[in-house]
Length: 301
Image (cartoon, rainbow, N blue to C red; front, side):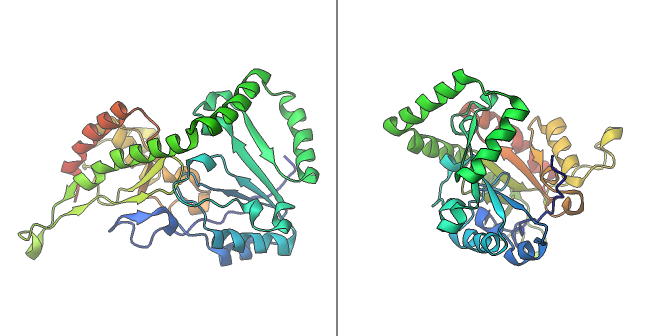
C-alpha cells in the first residue's frame, strides 16, 4: 500500500524429512539469513507463530535472535499470533522478549481462528499507542467500521472461555484429532526390497509433528503417480506438489494444499515434496479421509 518491497526469508526444511518423522521445531529460522536480508530501508518484519503451514512454534531463542535484529535496526515487528490458543508447547510472544521489543511490536490476534468462526472476520491488534494509532487510522480508511454485533459476541466469548476451561479443552481436542489423523501415515507401509525384504522391515510415509495450529505436513516423496494418470492442460506445467495435490483429489477424494503456495517464486521448490492437511474437522470426516488415504498403498515405492 505504501510501495514497500517484500524480501522473503524461508525456513530451513527438516534435514531427514523424507526418511523419518520430523518435528515442527526442525523447520528452523535462519537468523543469519534473516540478518543478511535486512537493509537500511527495512521498516518491518512479519512473523507468524504458531506457524501456518508448518505448525512450528518459534522458540524463545529464535525470538530473542529476531528481537535483537529488530532492536539493533529499529525495525517494527508484526507478530501474527492468530493461532496462539492452539499451541501444544510453551508459547512465547515476541512482544514479551524485552521492553524494547514491546515498543517495536504489533501483535495480531484472530477471534475467528480462536473460536472457529473464521467467517466473522473479527480480530485485534495489541501494541504501544504510537504503533496502534496508525493501524486504527488505516483501518478506518480501509473498511470504515467493524461489525459491532460479532465484536460484542467475541468479547463475551473470551470472558466465558476463561471461566469454562475452553482453552484447555480446545488444545486437548485438537491434539486428539492430530493423533487420530496421523495414524494413517504410520499405517501405510512402503515395501522393502533387496536383501532386507525378508526381515520384516518396512518404511512409512513421513510427516511433521506440529507444535501448534491445526495443520499436518506430509512428505510425499515416496508416492509415485502412475504414468497413465492424466493431468488437464492447466496442470501440465504446475509445480510437483500441485500435481500431487491434484492426484490426491482426483484419485483418492482427499484435498490437501500444495506447500509451494506459501513460497515466493524463487523459493517454490524448497518444500515441493510436502502437502498440508487440515485436521480441524469432525472425527467422522477424519476417519473417512483415512479410509480413502489407504488407497495410497499401491502408489508407494
